[in-house]
Image: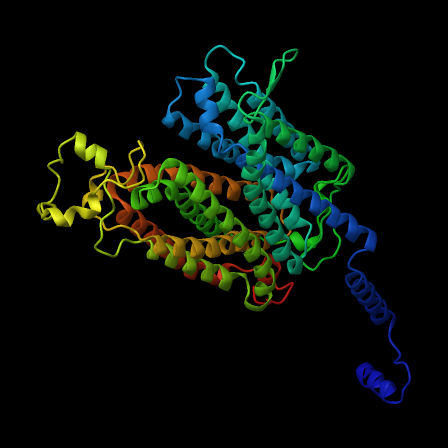
Length: 539
């Protein structure tokens, strides 16, 4: 009857008469609807994005801290400690990733329960102190290489704040903003990796001797100036965190929420949108996928120099120079991809783009497989000074005119070039043509950034409004572990078995990753979508 009366009143143009209970219920619904319509104030919006930009800067400085000395570590190590060899250099390079792998979950856990300013400032201060230590590793009279190892490990430890940065950005953006913000974060990271070596190159103008400040025993030269510059940037970053950075949190729909990281607020400040459990199957799957993505790229980066020296008879200097140019171009390509993927994901969704990125990476490594019949040049000096080992197959005992490809390169250098005879696969594995290598560079440079940003975006959406510090810490740690194992894979598989085995195994790993993605594909959805609070939009 009440319903009929209301309908009649509406038909007559009159206000329907409601009972007290109905009126009160409608008022509550109207208030809730109004609160949802007012997403956030303009002041809150500006403050939130200023804080996100500070996180972009922190990510940029973290990657600069890794790459700004990467080209000068070996000559500086040889200068300060004559006992250091190439194997110890490997430990110094890996120490950064080891430090980051250990620190990421710790800083992530810290950021879950305390204001994020605390782990951000402490981690940046550790990096500043570590860079200053690096500038003084020449002072001790012995064991200088261990001081350098400690300094690089501490720089990596400070870089564990990447987990805090990404967890903050995930909590301070809505679902519609998330992909763009994560892409910008990855772009800042990529730009840092690109500009680090550029800064290093500029500081080479100071020279090896430079100037010395005897009062504090500081040598300012081409090796120490980059890390001191990095320390200065770190100090500026800390100042900006104190002046500009503020704690902000919005839900998946962009509504302002109370943050558990704010001073004086309790954990029960979280609203009902946090109710529900995180899909840990999807979380573990994305950690595995992220490990694979960073592992194959670490292999790609590490294998570039030995592969080009073996296949194209490049000298060490040529390999470093040409591959430096190639990696710089790939870095620029990655930044462009990060910008494009923000728009593309709105049309196709993150899962489909991740699938496509893995396929592109697979094709890139498949192209690197040796297919032809032409063998790489052999290091002629080693053949001339030593007899051909008994492992040479009978088909190598060919007429003189068939040995043209094994003649010494005509670059007139005292440095042995070509594929070393100590790698037995050089005698029977076809070479990887330069066109293959360059095509692979383009494809991997396209697929890797796509997979990287989509992994982070999907991961943060799956976690939803839950505190993400520890989860982001584990994701960062898995990536650091991949960067540690990548060079080990190259030193063991490529050196002993050759490119055919190395790239075949990588292709196999990527295929398994694609199968894993297919299995968990339907589970890779946003937390709010999973619990029916939002509709799926190309997730």
